[in-house]
Image (cartoon, rainbow, N blue to C red; front, side, top):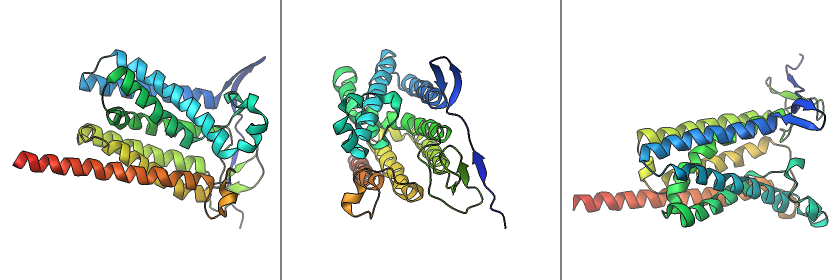
Length: 272
């Protein structure tokens, strides 16, 4: 019986004119921030916060995302190479971004935003930004698909992709698994914010985002080709992405528990 597969040979470039290239990944990355701008603007308008905060928070998040993702890749996944080639550390256009690093970068950026701009708890910003980040993650993983990168392990499932730009093996389209998972996470967080007033429960949306997204990462890493990193030094029981995801899941559970605990205390005080 012949294996049914989807042959994938999409060029990463949409347009090439001389040295100029418009790439799918760049277009999708930019689209993620445009959608994020719309979503954040809608939330800010709903809550009546100063309009000037919108441009500032997006700048902070953009810088935190790019620098965090880049340094995450450099230090978590390929430090032996970059330690010998430090001049390439900031060459983002050569590829190499890590979502765990992006998460750390965004948290640090929002800490700075909260101190310098909003003068509110960092959790106020995090509870709203994670909705935007969940939507952006969908675009990023589709961008990875267009680049034929972060590929899955070989498989015989009928929906396997053959990434011709990599090899001729049928593989799990793990980029699509992640994109779909993050879309469902975005819909859940968006629903909880708009329909259940979850934004008023400090840390709840942030905790749900961390615990769900990185739990998904732990599961889906089983279907990915190894991306290197420090996994071999820890016995190959888990991938680098799985090891890095565990602390985020635990932190997420803590903030869920914290938000529920404060809600319970608030309800008791109201009754008294």
